[in-house]
Length: 149
Figure 1 (cartoon, rainbow, N blue to C red):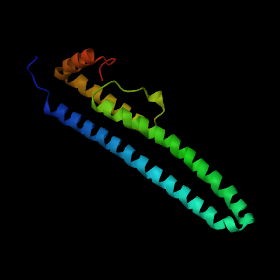
Figure 2 (figure 1 turned 60 degrees about the vertical axis):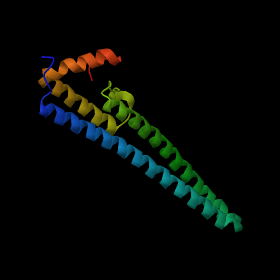
Figure 3 (figure 1 turned 30 degrees about the vertical axis):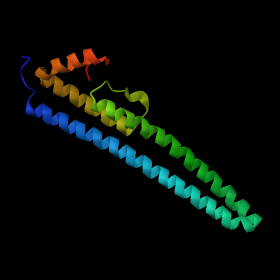
Figure 4 (figure 1 turned 135 degrees about the horizontal axis):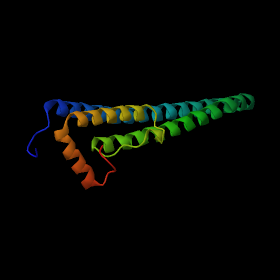
């Protein structure tokens, strides 16, 4: 049983899973870049508008009281989402290396849902393919990850 090769169905499913995880990592990087550029352009636009209105104290005050809180809130949401996508981007390479997943309670949204779905699919593939199960158990025992992933 040690010289048996995994069936092509299992290898195809594993390749598909790896491709989806790479796509997830790529989309989180792309989203982060887009969010940062949107925030920086709105910040620059707000500061330019404040600079143009600085000749009139009344216009400057009314513009400052609307632009600055808006830019602050947008910046806060941007930072929160950047942290969220950074966590998701850290999870994807770990999952691609077939390490143990983080629990769904980590609060990472859609990425966690997709990861949990892929994890359940992986368990189903392992259940249907006992040849591969022994190599996963051996890998989990040697790399220190908690359980079969």
